[in-house]
Image (cartoon, rainbow, N blue to C red):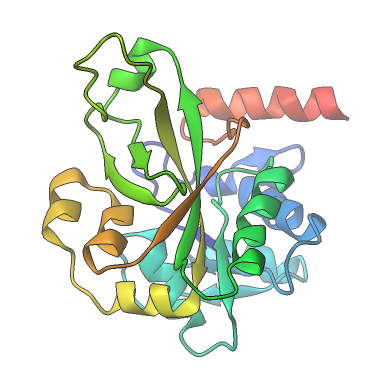
Length: 240
């Protein structure tokens, strides 16, 4: 599922900007299809323009019926009546899909025979102090089995004993969910810690869902600004 809002706050209409002759959202949709990892790929949108763009290209799209606070809500509404086991959320503004990381996420559920995992998500190590201290980077700490303990915009863990080696991880907002976890999230109002931190992953934790974190070294290339779009255009040219 590729949630796709037209009204992005920092770069309105970014998903319909042209990247190598095609709108960004169509590039992302085709990239997801071309991974051959999924039984079905859908764009889930509140925009007639985005919906038409995908359908006119013989793609599959679902119109959201409601306004949604976050991608999880939009996806949950879309899958509520679909026969699915595991749903993967691919960001609409990331046309250069990291197939290796998505494969690792899906493998979590193939290995989880006892259904101990409700969600899987990605983390990438940070070493630069500016990155670690930047509240726009959501940090995640895990237990010895790589299950998420907590997510925060604060620096976690706090490095009190400088003799101890500490690693810091940024949460990448790419998720794979069991369908029931999504539906339970959707049916629960915003929780207190989620409201404080503005991190949707925390709601899953506050309602008791278990999140397995998978480490990746691949930094995603998202399109959040006009400058990002220029970079993406250049990357595409270099790859052709």
